[in-house]
Length: 82
Image 1 (cartoon, rainbow, N blue to C red):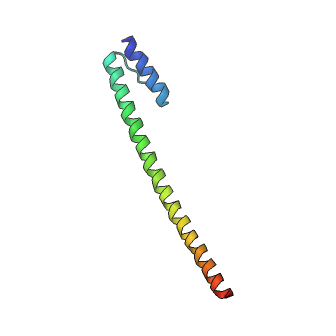
Image 2: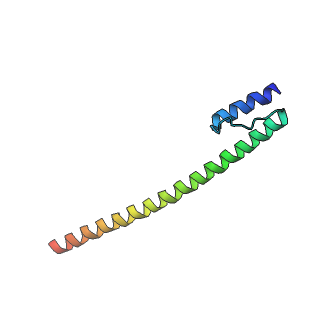
Image 3: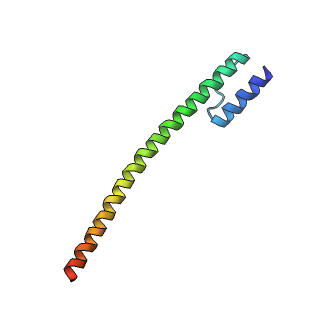
């Protein structure tokens, strides 16, 4: 029980989910809580990663459009001066 409690404390502290009102009273509950916390952290990390990827992709599109416009302006300027 002491080992399960120690692991529970470490996982809850690292995951920063807080200790809350519901705490495990035996080793099985502690192990179940650890599993649920790890699943939750994994799911949350995946969602944040996907959202970041979406925002990054939209910025890349904007940058590429801006670069194309600058190149087009440069070519038009070069043609007009010749």
